[in-house]
Amino acid sequence: MALKALLYTVDDVRKPSVVDIIINDEVDLIINTPTMLSGAIRDGFEIRRQAIRKGIPVITNIRLADLVITSFKSSVEYGCMDLNEYRVMN
Image 1 (cartoon, rainbow, N blue to C red):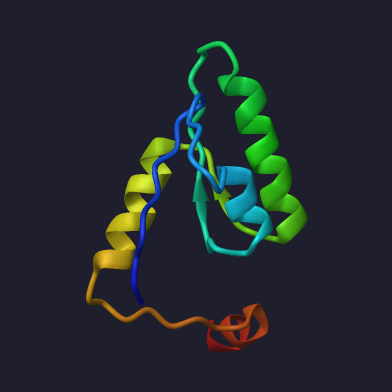
Image 2 (cartoon, rainbow, N blue to C red; image 1 turned 180 degrees about the vertical axis):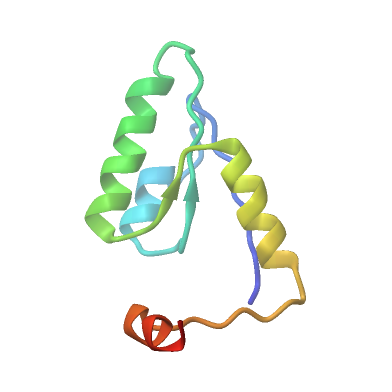
């Protein structure tokens, strides 16, 4: 899995915009940690709203983001089980 990070700020004027990137399905995960700066709350809301519309997971907590990124970089393989499979084992 390739991990590509894009960093956009509130007053970023690059094209495509962060909302365009979300709408065009160019991201798989969003880490959105808005500050209390003017416009950041509004922009953060729009980013989260578009992500929800597209079904893209959003992390809004920096500690959780750190843990998720650490797990992506880990070489440990994790498995998943259906909840019913887990119940049978216990």
